[in-house]
Length: 288
Image (cartoon, rainbow, N blue to C red; front, side, top):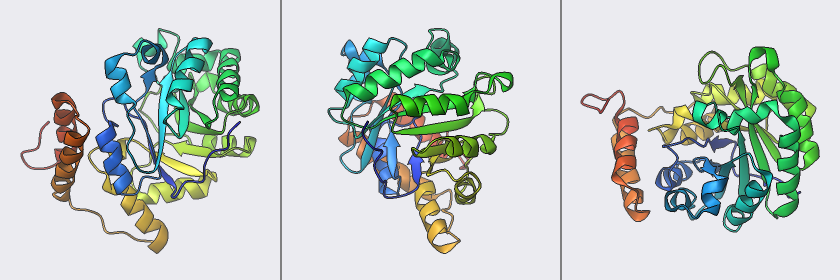
């Protein structure tokens, strides 16, 4: 098992489908993200040399970068992880996606119901690559089937280098309130680093999660969409106890920074248009 690296900060950019393209990740890194994670990519598609998938796992030049993969066949996941490990600093495995098309294929959060398969995957991959292998999971399938703590113990024993816990169930999706007490329980149950995720919208939230749960790092997702400043604001708040919140209008300047990076990385127009919606949300005349 390779150890999880000591990151230069406490805040990590979450993997988000359609959002965390390489240009956006590079921008978040510029504003202080300690680690960025690609959109989740199919192990099967990586092995088929799918053009779109291979473009999704291109990495920015600076800082720690992780590739998140998903799948349900152990051998394919191992081979895909080997390919990604040639360039990525960390390989992450998705056990959290609640999207029906992923779950119905037995992947993502569907695997929360098959702990033996999860153990097989983690054990096989961690033995096969010389990079840290991490797992991002949810609380469980439902409130009646919360198994994150026991699964975290088994994942650690199987060789994972760190665990990220999104403190909602699959049934909850992105609704309701994340149960931070579960993050604390997972942290107390394992000795490897734990990354907390869920309902971190402000620097104050990030600080509160670190203090209330004892987690090692905080992962921010939706709060970073169109707002790479959140990482800089968190760093300032952690150091000074206060921060200057960027005006909405400043997001326009950040979007032009994104466009420069998008040109460098040859990001397609549809992705740039989607990012434009995120960056202009809440602004007069912004895209809806």
